[in-house]
Length: 334
Image (tube, rainbow, N blue to C red):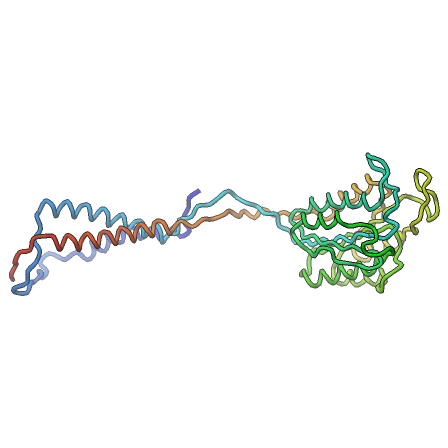
């Protein structure tokens, strides 16, 4: 739609007429006195009247365009409500050797824990429109794979490229939490900050104890949601299908304590369906905060009437000078 930013400027439209009316010479006032010997142009009456009429119309048109330009005409596009959110979400994914266990059932059959995690976590990333997403991959060491960003496609691609052994074979849960806290401190302001940590083992590597890291997170206002993955059973018990289990036991008490200390929750996933349900529940607990901003793209149009007004004024000035030079000249004396 077409609108003007400063409509009050349109009140200037009758200004020339008002000035002419107020400044008109009063009856009985002094007439113009012409010095002796001064020659003035004398115009043909009919031609002068026509030129005066056309010139007056063009002059009013130029003035109207100038006032319109001063009012700043704009073209407003369709309303655009970009997603807005004050939440930063960091994902920490375990790549230790036990994530290779094939104990997750899907529609296609048994898959390893990491494959199921990548599929479900990837869908979670795609749904977080408006949130900044970051990615940490950890095992013996914790590495920042993607800083907090709105570019969800890149984070998803980096997640899909993860593989067992990329960060070692053990599990450094405390270091993963510590790295997430450092990135939050460096890239965000205090507010909605969430860490989703997924693991299938116990903390057996790294320098920072998980509960110490959780205490730091609680002081800094970071909520941690922990997810324990893997089928039920102790280390050494056979997997579904008679395969041997090689992974360590899951430290559920420690993961529960981490979540409780930071105001988050603990979830347990024993198959792909449960894991997908957990990420759906995370969407409910940490909804994407979309606000209707009412923003509309604006395109300024004032250069067009301004250019036309200047062109008309210039044309009228040149025409007046040319007409004055072409009119017959006579002698009028005082």
